[in-house]
Length: 513
Image 1 (tube, rainbow, N blue to C red):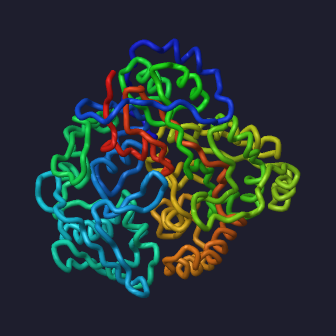
Image 2: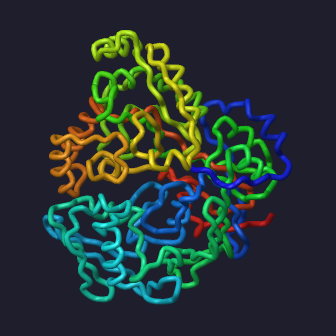
Image 3: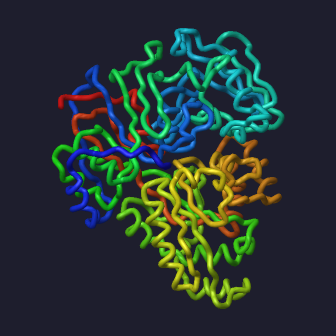
């Protein structure tokens, strides 16, 4: 998602050029690999796009794909998300709430150690959450813990989280990768790690080398992981075809079937809740008028977006995130209606249409293409879209979260955790600047209820507000489609939306080449 260093892939350039115009036909299942039984040893070389000078190894402020890959592999949270997006223990043995979900008691697994060999204790958990919630420098996950009043170490393995209000979502919150556990005195420049790997070297916008954490509680196979940044998709694919890398994160979906036809390659096609929204700032003209926002949603031909942007590898969206949530709503499917869009624009004071600038960047596969298709579709309703394409460094720079009309991408999340991330005033990524008092009031009531079935009506009330008046255009949910050499084992479909089996390199091995 940002601008990495220039790397020249050897050979295969003509191969990419020759297939660039071909498209996959419908998003069906594609090839799988068999790398044999797991074996120890070897180096996994992973290609990504999107690195930039702001790349980080700080556990608590990841932004782009490379950041998140590093975070997932260097650090563990108390809980995590499995391949089916279910919450499962990582460092924790258990976490239990009291009767009103205002006190959560967590017990760590026995024998846990950091990469320097020191025990992982409850004091480290206390330090971690104090760091996340530092009022002078709140980290990405801080919005999840706004109600966290105090963290108390009861003994070496037991931690008590005391909240100033009920929060039935707390277990989900501590499962976010942005809530990873770090040691007391943690130095993000020279990190001591709680995850399966530790850091060997790191150069922002270029490369990262990870080696196994010999003190990790679970088995691993690889001797080393190299994460390499590339400037663009062509360079990334060239690197794979020339065996400069063993696996790449996210491929142009128009090339899926072509790459799969190479007998050396396998495709990992994961159905997810990942979304590539258009973001409209509800506090800035013209989007401060709900009729304009509704009109923009009605110009989108969603089926065409899925076919042209995702080559069929995705599902149609309905301006609501969290499609894997238990309480996902069944609202009437919004379809393209150009006449109604024009009528709404006229009622909003734009009888002759309007001019807007759409900021896009190669932040995720399909983002720029989505902007181009939207501009074509909107033109038929008199909306004249000027596309401003910037590099990812600029996109995630000072203007990020300030663009009037732009894009973003999100991995799979359930509805309620996603709201905390992007639809509250205190959210770290409130890119639409949504802040509705009634919405906030209902959300506070819903968050206090731990059982999804008991908060269903409240969730539907929240979803209806966003569906009717929100600032997101959620046109579809993209499959996560990656490619790798057939000698790579351990990569399985993963619904989180994070590439290459959720970045879980601790499960990967290198088979016979």
